[in-house]
Every structure is written in C-alpha cells, then in structure tokens.
Image (cartoon, rainbow, N blue to C red):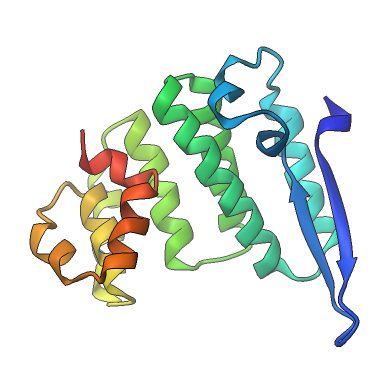
Length: 177
C-alpha cells in the first residue's frame, strides 16, 4: 500500500513557499469503493499522516489537509459502519489536536466519539464551553448537533451556501439519525 499514499510538494514562484498536498488513499480508490478495500491498514495510514507533521513547518496547512482526509474517512464510516474507518477517524482527530486547539478540530473529535458512544458529562461540559466562545454560527450549529440540542432556528439563520455545506458534512449525519 506504500505506493498508494504519497506526499508531494509544490513551490509557488511569487513567494517561494512550499505547499504540501496529500495524495491520499481515498483519492486513488473511488470513494464509493473505499469501504470494500480489504487491506486498508489504519496503522500504516496513521504513520504516514504523522510524517506530514515532520516534513512540513506549516502546521495549519497540514491540519487542513488531514482534516479534509478525516471528513472523507468519517463519511465512509457513516456509509459502511466499518469500524476501521471510525478507529482511523479517532486517531486522526487525536493527532490533529496535538498540534491545534481550533474549535473545528474539537468539534470533529467529539463527533467521532459520538459515533462510538454516548459522551460523558465532562465531554458535554467541554462542548458547552466551546459554545460560550461564540466563535461562529456554524460552529454553534455543529456543537448543538453533537449535544443533540434543537438547531432548527439556527439552521434558518445560515445563508444558503453554508446550509448546503453543512448538509454535505459528516456531522449532519448525526442530525439526521
């Protein structure tokens, strides 16, 4: 599987910055077939993702790309209920949280936990603290989905594009269950 997961670098001429792109396993296997892959090795993928933090100084860019990969894996879990994808999702969120405390990464961590078990009282309190930050309306909606609170009025406040985006994210699957 090593040849199926690569990291490539591109240099932009105007500022000489190096941009890293994850050519992930999911981009090589059609999304609708990813859950049928029998040699999907969680530990191998996890190790490759860790290497991205070692070779790239732009942690926020790495987090962005790994988070994007996480959302794909989580979507596959929602469709397949294959625990390998849930396990990988949990590992990815824990890895990202070692490098960033951004609310979005905590939201993703808790939505992964929510798929495997009920959240503890302490975890729910941590999510409510994030609500207190009033970071954004979409963050509030996502947190309330995890907490199983009513979001109907909040969804009405979202603009059309944001509402469409929300409905395409894995977290919306928690709202529809």
